[in-house]
Length: 221
Ligand SMILES: Cc1cc2nc3c(=O)[nH]c(=O)nc-3n(C[C@H](O)[C@H](O)[C@H](O)COP(=O)(O)O)c2cc1C
Image 1: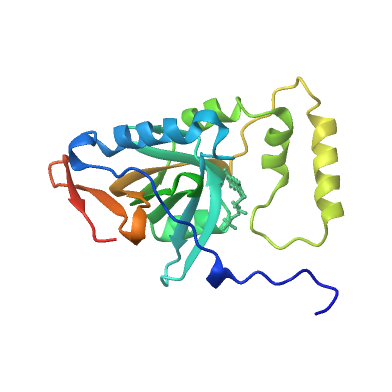
Image 2: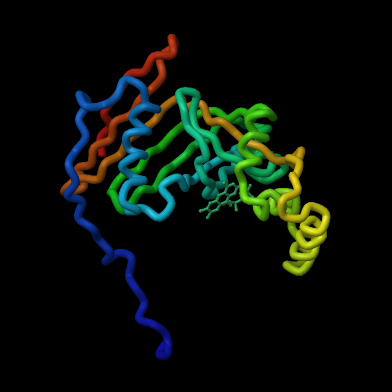
């Protein structure tokens, strides 16, 4: 232990949250509008490194959960969209069980947004429209990766990429891989969490009613 850095004890790490609270009367009627307000603040001033990074949790057919970070690429009244490989672990989970949890960990603002909902694939046109906005290298990367599969070496990956780069040089249009595309998460509940003093945080959760409208409930911290 002697030549190592001193060990940091996480039990002693403690931040005091002093932020202003959130009040029911200030909330938007629709959770996606409220998300837009918070997202705009999160994206302001470069306070957060990647405010559109979110943790997506899925569960397989046996209910075994798994989580990973992805990038939010679009949001609107219909929900939250990310893009991925349709043969990846998460996509296989979603084919068996469409229920998803999303979490935006905006720690620098003492905030988090937690979404519970169901996923369905985006249409091919929507996927293609987004794919074309990706840098050339990322387009080739989407073809190269057999995401979530065990591979023999880094070198094999680099070789596969180099072969594709020869076939589709910069400037040449790369087709959309058939096993790649988006998922749109339609929210069933959206919780806005604001850290406050003495651990008495604000938690306001939108929940859908049968008729598609939303009600807001306050949760104990
Ligand atoms: C900041 C960040 C952003 C990421 N964005 C994406 C993304 O948009 N889509 C994606 O498929 N993987 C993304 N990844 C990689 C995933 O976390 C994960 O490794 C990959 O999707 C495979 O997950 P799975 O095997 O659970 O399906 C990102 C990772 C990080 C750390």
